Image (cartoon, rainbow, N blue to C red; front, side, top):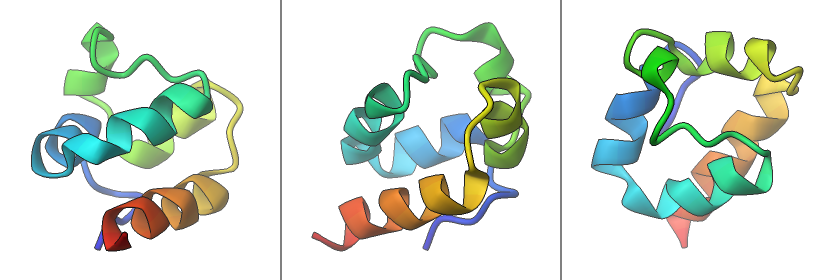
Length: 64
């Protein structure tokens, strides 16, 4: 399960299928240097994204 306090790089490493979800939100997290240091909530806030909706969508993706 993905939570908002998880590092973005850990999420993408563990669940590569989440790249599509990040891209749909306009978060190019793979190439972003900040992704190495930010957790999901910090990254979402930096992009003006509702972190709870993002977490919901990421978890839905990994359950498929």
